[in-house]
Image (cartoon, rainbow, N blue to C red; front, side, top):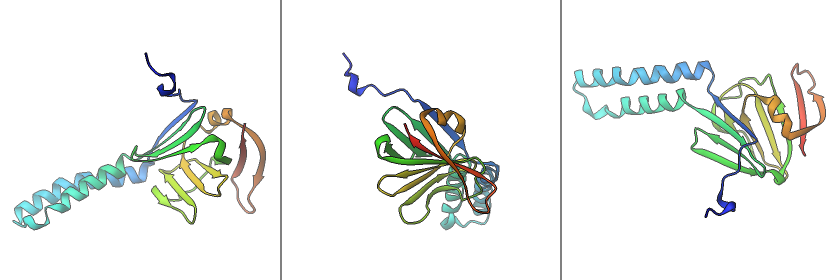
Length: 172
């Protein structure tokens, strides 16, 4: 019989966000450029640079298909970038969760964003999770309103000179 502690918990919130239009176009362009480079290298009889189309095609595929997954269950928040870079945040170690519906382009990819701050970004709305240890994790997500079901509103604040409203939430 299956051990109940080994059965995965159902997700209370699940979001999988693909890259916005600009990086997807850039990625697909790089994928298309790979075979063109391969043909040019073969025609010019320069096999020593055959790695160029392979790198171009692989990097383009990674950029075109990059995703961020945010999964919330009863115990953890799991954030994954392209299902390669994953971070599990225990709910009891999360201090605050801040959201921004009108997030500007703060970059794309798995990013170091300063001391104690890591970003999993593909564009669009973002969540900012501050841990009790002082570390911060930023992730692109969608359906922010359904995420509010699991956190209760604490207070709203406006940044000076900023047109976007930030909501700060504390774990229930």
